Image (cartoon, rainbow, N blue to C red):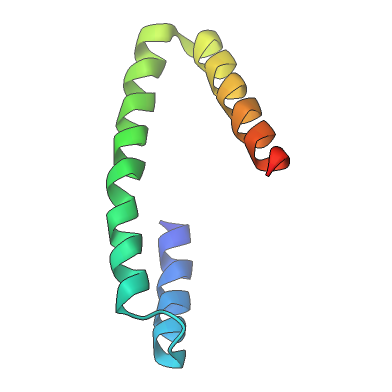
Length: 72
């Protein structure tokens, strides 16, 4: 909730300055679908795997993402 309240003025000012146009807004809206899907998948996995297993899986995922970002 705090992030949302802080992000709304940011988006408003970006739109007023012309930095955030319709194409960027559409792409941001489209990016919400995989984000919510990932959150739902993570929630289901956490209940099935257990907390310690979920933490390990999350750590492995983050290491993979970090490695991919560093190799670019």
